[in-house]
Image 1 (cartoon, rainbow, N blue to C red):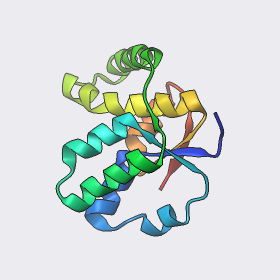
Image 2: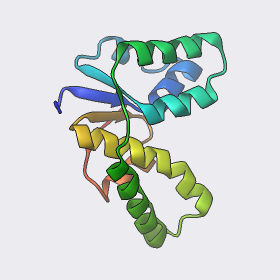
Image 3: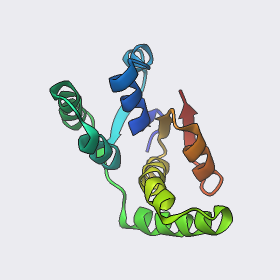
Image 4: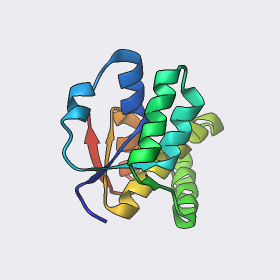
Length: 136
C-alpha cells in the first residue's frame, strides 16, 4: 500500500501497441509497477500479434498482479447502478465501464496511481469514488 505504486490502464498499452505513444514515459517511469488482472484480461483478449503477447507475458512475470477483491466487485456493481441512474447509460455502456471501475477500485484499494489515457471514463468514475488518477 504505497503511493509510489502504479497500475497502467489498458489504454496506455493500446496506445503504445497501435500508435507508439507513451514509450518514453514508460521507459523513464519511476515507481513500482503493478499489473491489474483486469488489464491483463482486456489486453489478452485484444492481443493481435506475438510481440503484444510477449509484453503481456513480461507484465505477468515481472510485476505483481493485483486482483479485484470480492468487495471491489460488490462496490463496482453499486457504482454502476448509480451511474446508470445518473446518466441513463445503456447496458452495453455499463458493460464497457465495468472493467474500468474494477481497475480504478483495485488501484484505490492498494493506494496506487492509475495511469490512463482514457480521461472521459475514469474522470467520471472518480466522481463516485476518489482514487489517484494520472492522465497521459
